[in-house]
Length: 348
Image (cartoon, rainbow, N blue to C red):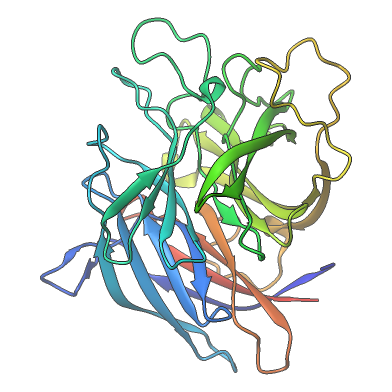
């Protein structure tokens, strides 16, 4: 994979319902996965009143792609988790879904998690999360993922043997979040298949870029690792999403979306380290920029130049000319000012 070419885009207006009129509010699509060589597309919604998995049909690959919502499955509540914030999704070899949640910062704090659900949304099991990712439930916080900045991403290797997620930004004991002046270092967490489930294995340091300075006065900013997509056991795509809020005009806030190819080969396994501070010997994963979405030609005027909250991706079906495809999706945050955008890219 060396280049990505935009071949189509489609959006679903905000504040709709599925099924229409009588269904629950549609939106919040934060992660994607596919089945049947990309012909079946599933999206996880981060709806706060219980997670939902939507199935989509992708048509019109010859010219103008169209995405149609075809079904929805509501997820049952996992034990001890009444306010899930689902962000990533992976279809496992046995047909169940693994779903990651980023955790919450309000007390009692919920740690980031990965739960497995059956095809009908029934809770099956929760995967073990290493203690270094888990913040104290109350009181002072000295370790773990920051609230709403835990496991945004989730992907399964093509051989079905490795599951990958990552903290969106640095763990508390590892450093501060990215700023306009400096990036930060977060962790990718690998799970290995064992005895019919997945167990924590290695961890790798990932260097996030600084937040891009905007041409306006900012009031809030972030840059985080929001999605991973495995090409094999050691090579992945990594999606970084930056966001800067415009203090004087929030409607003109700006996102920056960058896609990297990363390799774990040669990177240090940092799972034995409780903190990454004071370890200059650590070798992070190698990153190669594949695409800066702000530089893509042909984007809708409704997207450029501010973009939107893209935080999910999956491989799509083969295009009519035989090229492989990649799909990006944006989370509309259930906001009337945003949409659910699907971008279709040809891979060369």
